[in-house]
Image 1 (cartoon, rainbow, N blue to C red):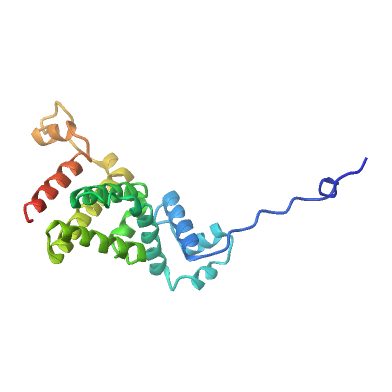
Image 2: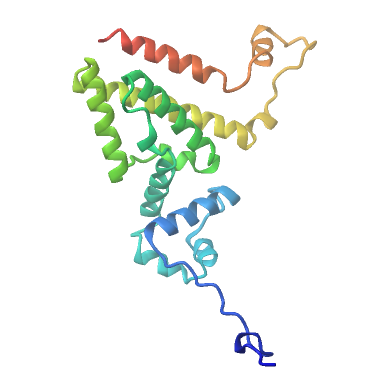
Length: 217
């Protein structure tokens, strides 16, 4: 009986091939590292270790850490899957769905929200999305200037909300000294806070903003 050479004693399976380094791959690895350990614990050295390469190898693809963080913001933006937005719908449908997806993508990476919030995203996908949104608003009757102002308002509201909620989810609520029911300092504000969820106001705010913008047409 013959024995296949691949199964003879002493042979070892080939190790899995390590993914080739690229800007998108490194940015995704860096985002995963920040998700796991937090932004304050991130370093280029730890990134290199996680990638299985010398940390200096990362600098062949990024000028510095800020350049890497720009790419991380682009990676988060790509999670919005903007091509599947309801582009054939009304400007309001596109704007609402975009904001909801942006919020969802940011809250999936609470440690990295501050990275996204502190830099413009200028990837080709982001720029193309901005152009399509402005064109859709213009078709609905807004001027290009109004369309840009509205887009900025919606983005800032959404990112600001996500940033605030991320801080809470990362531990701010556990450090809160909110008064408890029955205490002398338990007032109507504390009661209202107990009767609502910390993120329920997003939908109210977004609806109010869209209603207000609609009046500009």
